[in-house]
Image 1 (cartoon, rainbow, N blue to C red):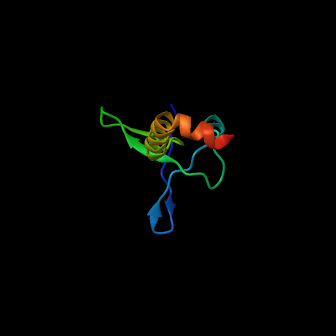
Image 2 (image 1 turned 90 degrees about the vertical axis):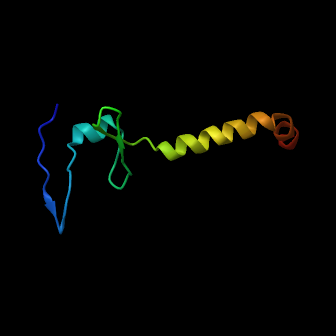
Length: 75
């Protein structure tokens, strides 16, 4: 567990993540992070995009449905 303080950034508050955390999340300057609420009312910071997972699921369903058509178009 990390003990961190929330500094003031201009007229807002910010959160500065240590390099070790950024390395472990495989993140760099300018990357997006997502704050998701867990069922136990806690929060999770992650590079995972829940919207992307929905889009990927739709794409897989589409490719499965039109597998033969996509295969014929690839020739």
